[in-house]
Amino acid sequence: MIRVVLLLVALVALSGFRPHGGIQASISTCPQGTSYVGVGDGFQGAQASGSVSIPSLFTTYTGTNFSAHRPPWNVPAADYAVGYTGTMLDPTVGGNMPSCATLSGSGTGPYSVSINAAPCTLSHLDFSLYSGMCITVGSAANGSTVTFDNDHFAEGTNCNPNGSGLFSVNTTGSVVIQYSEFDNPSTSALIQGMIQNNTGGSSITVKYSAFMSYDQAAIQMQQSSTVVSQYNYVENIGCCGNHGDYLIGNAGSGTTAQSSKFDVIFAKNGTATADYYVTNQNGGTGVISNATAEYDVMLGATNAANGYLINLQSSGTVQTVNISNNYMGQLLDYGFFDTTSGGGTISGPVTCTGNIDMSTGANATGTLSGTTCN
Image (tube, rainbow, N blue to C red; front, side, top):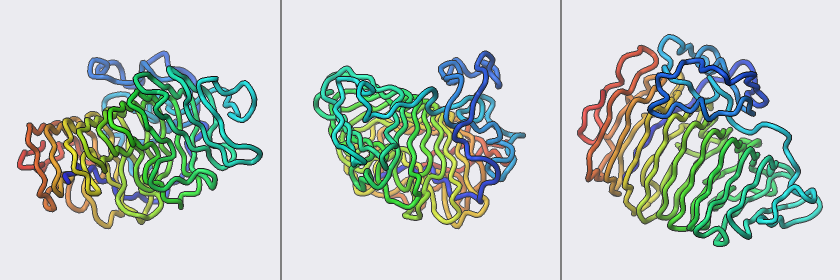
């Protein structure tokens, strides 16, 4: 299996505040201007407030001051809030859930939520209550779209689905998750997939959301699918000491397209590694038609024991790779690009350009599958 790993190794303990509850008072002007709107700067689509806002991300929050060489575009969490806003509703209270969704459970739980018809929109619901509610989007949504908007999800004693996903996508339809937050408050349980695709033919889009602490995958693909991650903030990746972990991963078969643009990935745990895979891993035999990471911010650690940001290895196939215009903090032990444990195949073109080392402001250099990165 091939994997393209953007490995973000742990960071020193944080000073300051927990970002939850951060408020952005106004979104009428762009803090970094509008020069990157043409390539997808997400500021215009952001809400005026959100559950995660970290204005000090490039100054004091990570323990390293990157302000001199920070990205020139508007960055999620730093320049605009992500996550949910507004009044959050208890899904167990009558009338709070739409008729297209079914709530199972009683009393103190456990509760689970499934979709019984589509299109369906679930908005401002707090699925973190009652020690977590597992979500399933199944065949009732085939050929249609299910949208989760301004919702809160969390692992807990009533939803700790090792191997199947806190949020399971078992449909050939489309799932859109926006302005939401995923949490692992215990930072100890093993969650292989916060969001996990288990059925071929699905499409998953996650945007303007936050993933706060998880051990393995934020988005895990098991079958042929398309996943788009944009304008998201990821923190405490690899929180629980299992092994290298990731934003998007493919552990299955079939043909998958995966894209991450304008995301932020920050690993703060001092003992575990944190990987960002955009292609096959864990024995996956499928083909990745397109593995893209553009305009992402990847913050590593000053106390890294090992690590690399991009790595190819094992025996899968990737048809196209585009790793461009990313800003990467901390030069890890093996550099930003490492293919020494390779053996997989990239059958199509590789683009690896415009990546910046935030420590110096210079281009991050190296090689990726024989292609010179600069």
